[in-house]
Amino acid sequence: IRIFQLKDDAAFMSKAFEQLWENKGEILGGDRLGEPKQITVYGGPANADPRPIELGDLNKDCRFIGIMALYPKQDGKGSQRVVVPASDAGSFVFELSGYKIEARK
Image (tube, rainbow, N blue to C red; front, top):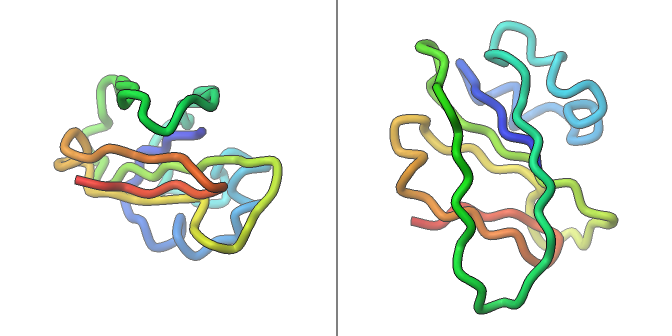
C-alpha cells in the first residue's frame, strides 16, 4: 500500500489509479505533501486482528490521508484507494480484501 498526506483529496480521487501509482502521486502537485509511505501487506486469515500502521508526523497542512492498495488484478467490486480526514484517521480500520480497500470506523 501507499499512504499519502494530502492537502486536498479531489485530485487524488479523480486521477487514474495507474497514473498515481506509477509516479508516486507526483501528478498531484501541491496537494501531495511529501513522499508517500510504502508498506507491503501480506495476506492472512479473515479473522486476523487489525495490524496497526504508524503514520508518523503529519505535515501541518495535511487535511486528508489517502491510501492506495495495489493488487495483482482488479475485480471491479470495489476501489483500490480510499481517503479519510487526517484529523480522524486514527479511528478508522482499513480493510484490504477481495482486491479492494475499505475504511471502517
